Amino acid sequence: MPRPPKKFRAYPFDYHHELDLTIESLSNLGDGIARVEVPPAPGATENAGEGWVVFVPFTLPGEKVRARIFRNDKNHSRADLLEVLEPSPDRAEPGCPLFGECGGCQYQHLAYDRQLDWKTRQVEELMRHMAGIEHPVEPCHPSPKLWGYRSKITPHFAKPKNGRIDAIGFLPNARRSGQIDVPKCPIAMNEINAALPEVRDRARRNASSYRRGATLLLRASEGRVETNPNAVVTEHVGELSLDFLAGDFFQNNPFILPDFTGHVAREAAAEGVRFLVDAYCGSGLFALSLAKHFERVAGVEVSETSADWARRNAETNGITNATFLAASAEAIFADIDFDPAATAMVIDPPRKGCSEDFLDQLAQFAPSRLVYVSCNPATQVRDLARLRDAGYRPETIQPFDLFPHTRHLECVMTLTR
View 1 (cartoon, rainbow, N blue to C red):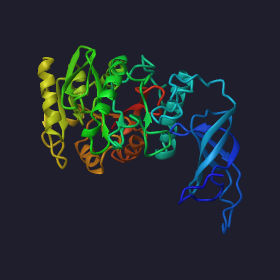
View 2: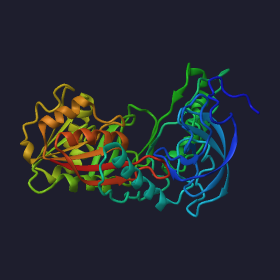
View 3: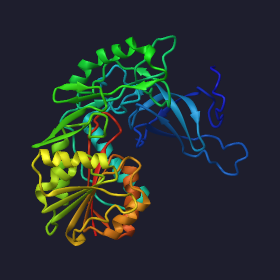
View 4: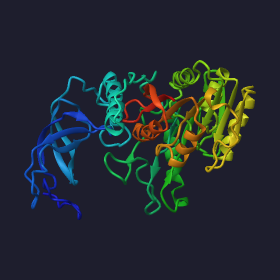
């Protein structure tokens, strides 16, 4: 038996204990969930082991599997998958030979229509359990491309040893350190995979120039691949042409963006709404995509650099009814003179969601309509609970699958006062 890690918790299973499990459902991280009966913990006054949860990655509901424990936490255990004893009819053949080792994808083994079902259900359960809200969730909108859709990847490597770079790739599954060597990524665009061998070879040829580990950039743009994060690249969304720095944030599935921005436009441009505020506007994706539906548009950013890119993109596309403001975090909407009763607001915060200060300022400004775009439904639902206290109620909830074969999704919630 291998020696357990130094801080291994021995209850309720020994290190590398093997057991057969039946998977009941999936977690929001994409792991299979099984429940087993275990004896009470030493000194426990009641059986806290009833329905003990074991998480097993790369398994599907209804499957019987053999798993091996590698960690016990206070109320659950984690195990590696050893063997699928009785597979689900929804099990699919993964499209990548590294699936199960590389931590980038969680759902390649699940048929795509069922991936969409589980992502829809994930939002429903978050609404119910985190916010206590029962509200219909529209079926997750599929990606037009299931493979070769990512326009940006960032493989990384550890500090060179003896002048040599070892693996260049991504984190291993269920680990917080290390690298899996990834010579090809099937969810990345073809241009990226064509350029990847030379980018990897160049890094290894220049290993002596790296004093520590590093992250490489490959951004596909107009048929080429940019590796300099400070280079200007262009993305086309419908009739729009948007410039930004290659290392900056931009949605990484260009094939779904017309449907994605089109939905946001339809939700924001309701009857009686004449103005639009795009908070967290970045280089102007939503503000400029939606500008034709409104009399006036104001994009707000705490970053002057991002606001400047949005201004340039407005000029490039001949959009004259949009202005972009670099606002302080303490007074984000101070320079907005729109009538709140005739204003819709789009917000697209980072994964951590909105700060309490931002939500307080939003509630004080009080737009009549709010379209909340999020790459993390958990923090989005958390913020929904606060917005509900400010008088907002959900009208439409629409998930979008920008990242097939992964646990990630974008969710668009439309809220009205």
